[in-house]
Image (cartoon, rainbow, N blue to C red; front, side, top):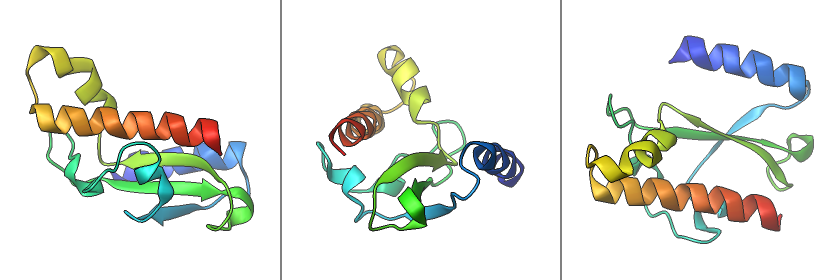
Length: 111
């Protein structure tokens, strides 16, 4: 929620004082760095069904430069990973969560 985001953003300012979060949309290369994530809003929060948002902090606050931080808001991608073998959540959503995690890793290692 908004209170948690505010706290997170304040802590990130301690790490990157000049960094400002920019909302990422489906066209950002991180969503297509290995797997193509067709619907970035489709990985809803597994328990609350909230639609996610994705934010990034870019080098020199310039979205044409390197993405240094990515933050998922109103979703819990690792929850899908943690419980994928238990059958608690739909397989398609778990698969998309794994794809997103792989994309984050590949993007970070190649940029």
